[in-house]
Every structure is written in structure tokens, then in C-alpha cells.
Image (cartoon, rainbow, N blue to C red; front, side):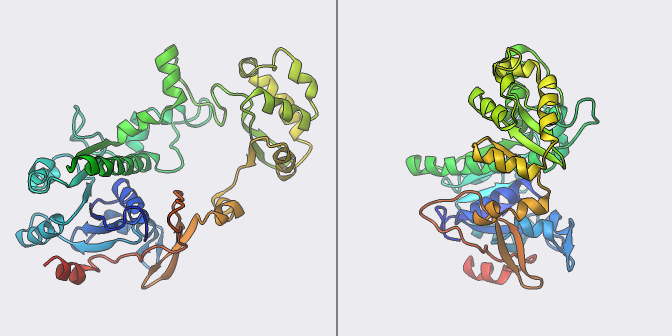
Length: 380
């Protein structure tokens, strides 16, 4: 891939989701990524479903455009190969439990003296410091401990996981941000740096309104379904056939909504004429709105509201979301090639840059140890 990170070499010691998501983003931005996998078994996610002809679609969706070599970093011969690649790497990314690479002689303190320009990024469940640093963590663990599950779901519902692995993905994104900042810093200082990203930290960082409410008002937020905690109307409403999202985030938009729904008389009602009053009386307001919405199907309402530039939309399933013409027009469904199954469709890169073409294809999907001979020859 052409991109702003072209000619940078990333040594990828990651597996499953946090790290591979980060290195996938780096690859999409032009970096060359050499993925180091465990011999015989490879990345754990090679065994995660769904499968296409015994190949993991999960793995393929995260590892396009990377090169694979299998190395055992406890083995002296494999370590020699690894050292030769490391000597030329710009970035090393790993998501082992803290202390693992130190045992093998590849901790930050071990490598920074040999390779002072190396950017070394570690993503882990709880980070490199703190009382929990040595504990393992998966996405669900940090969603729970980070407070996210406490504000997700319907009121009085069982604990509800966010529908994607947001604990892993946010950590992958923050690691990518840290790496790019470190690259800029290296341009100024000539030195590499160590980046320590904790999945739990990342969940705290994205609590947004919930953490603001607690830290400023000492309120402990609870699940509210689709409702926004401080803006109204701003949630999902029933229509004749399904639901519609309406996000009337200010008084002007609310006035437009009232006109579309032909309830303009309530705009001047003191119970609804400000966002604060609407938030206090949202139960009553929702009944009024849904009474009007029940007369038409969602697509009709969306059409009317879009004409007035009222933020709204249907609730799509994954098929509908992927096939949405807007998503298609933005090149958000691309393809990569696997030599056994052929073309494989997957999510594109949401970062569009004027200086680089957003290609419709990505690099090939690697089999385990597929690039050994090429890499050994290059780094001999």
C-alpha cells in the first residue's frame, strides 16, 4: 500500500485483536509489516471462526497485507533471525503479558540501547505498571472493569457487552495514535520511545458523558437504552414498522422536528422549549413523538426529516449497513486476496487522505510462515 508510512518497517509480535488491529492500520497507511508468529500454531486467531474452507475469516480480516514468518523467540537460531530483522525495524509492536519479552531478552531496556531509534509499542490489559499489571485481560474483562457495561443496555437489564470488541479496538487505535506521535517525535529528536497502552486505560478514556457526570456531579450513571443522558430528543423511537434514530441536538433542530411531526404547538410549551426541560420530561415527550411516528414507516419519516436536515436514520442490521450506498461510495468494503479462497471482502480504512489513493484492494492475506524464504534471504 502507498501511504504516509511507506518505507517504514514494522515488526509485529502481536496476536488476536489489539495488536493486529494496530498493525493493520499501520499497513493500510503504507508501512511494511512483518508478522512474527509462533511455529506450528501461529496467531491464536487463525483458529477463531467463522471459517471459509478451514481458513479463519476473523484472522483474514485483521492481517491483510502483512508478511508472515514463524519464529520461536526461546530458540537461539530463531533469535538470530529475529535480531537481524529487528536491527532494521522502525517500529516494534507487541501485546504479550508484561514481562514476557523481558524474559526472552527483548524488553524495552534490552533493545533501546542497541537500537536507539526504535519505536517500541506495548499494548496489554492493564499496562506495564500498577497492581494488576501481570494479570491477563480480554475485551469483556476491561469492558466490565472500565465501567462501559454499567452504562450499556436497557434499564434494569442484565450486564450487556457492547456489540463489538471495543476494549480491544480502542486500545489498538490508541496504540496507532501513539506510534504516529512517536514517529513525529523521532523526526525532532532522532530517538525512539516506549509506548505503554492499557486496554483498561482506554476504556476509562472513552467514558465521555458518563465520567463527566460522575466527576462533576458525583452521579453514577446507569443504562438508558438508546437515550442520551443529557440531550433530548436523542434516541430511538418506534415508527409504524420499526424504529428511527432522531438526534435533535439543539432547539432549532427540535423546532424543525416539531414542524415535520405537525406538533409545532409543543415547541413553546415550557416543558419542552429548552433542552434542559425536554430532558426532564423526556418520558412524556417520547409518548407524543411516537404517537405521531406511528402513522408512517421509518423510510418515509427519514425522507421527510432529511429534507429538513434533521439528524436521523434507520437502524440497520449488518447486511444493510455494509450494503448502504453511502458506505459503498466511501470504499469502506474492500477486498484482499488469499491464494486458496481467492478474493475476500473486508472493512476498508476510514482514514481518507488527499495525497494518497484509497485503493479498492489490500495486500494479500498471509499463510503461516509464508514469507520465510523471502525474509531470510533479505535479512541474511
